[in-house]
Length: 155
Image (cartoon, rainbow, N blue to C red; front, side, top):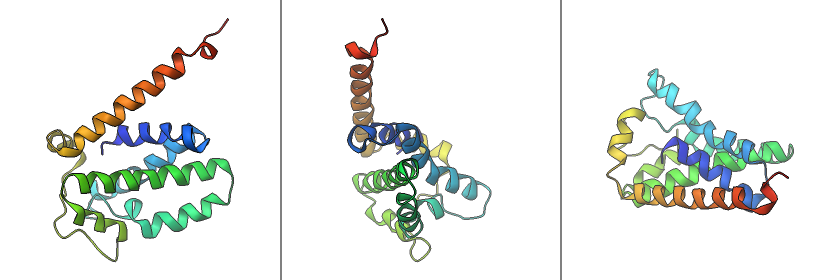
């Protein structure tokens, strides 16, 4: 999934979780804000490591869940990012890329290893891009309804 889609999907989760959309978005940003710079700087050779590992995210999310609504929203946002990335690789026919969820114990046998900028062009032709367009259409409809409702206009 592209970074903006993770943020949109997390913001939409406020409809079902009743958590702050802003803190959901913060949580959804965490995996890429951790992993992309680390890989770009050569600390790790993969772009899905610390932030995309369920071995890291789940214990952190459980700890955050006990600290109040904002922290719970960050945890849910983070886990939503992992869920969407897993869905993305499965839809694209690369289910073994989901092995990154168990990093550092496992790693994908044939990781893409494409930097974020190049990934965008590769991704435009992938099957999950259609799924991503669907997420944006739903997000647009939700936002349209939110701002078009009579309660959203000022008097």
